[in-house]
Image 1: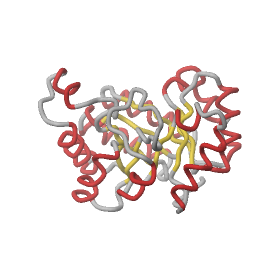
Image 2: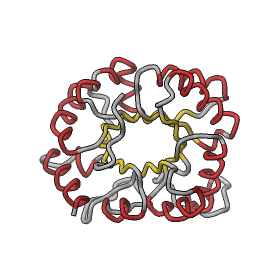
Image 3: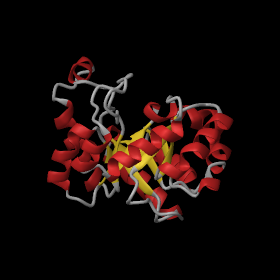
Length: 235
């Protein structure tokens, strides 16, 4: 199994139902990124065979499943996903300790190298959004609470916004995997993201993996966009 490259933390987000288009994008950007993230839209449209189609690139694959259900159901889903040889699979931390522990045990029984991480608070959500669903504490505090629970459950890391990197690192140490979406180079449109940061600032803050979608995939030249971001991280 390919290890996650330390030198290039960029995982390009292939969030499209079109397999041929996703493969074309992957082929163009593969020399400039460290991994591929296959989103729920892609997974729903293409299933296991869609994941296997990307083995040809020799890059780590993050299956962005975001499972959230009762422990037994999540364990079965994670077990099936880990069997596909993905490097990272994720669940929602808000599913609770029993669910996360079931996911961890299921994945490691199939492949000890598969990393199981948990989504804390979606980067599209602001404090106002959280308050609207009855969560009174700020996103930053909720992220830290869920990240702490995730580590206690034995998982490998969390998905968080760049703005929560510092408190998580301070509380949970340097070995915890921090996968950070909502990465936007200077001047890029925010889209549906609320808590964002530019790639170099996020990497320097302590992000392990930078998930970057539209700034690369929607660019006129995705390969050049990926190359430019990778180059900015190297300087």
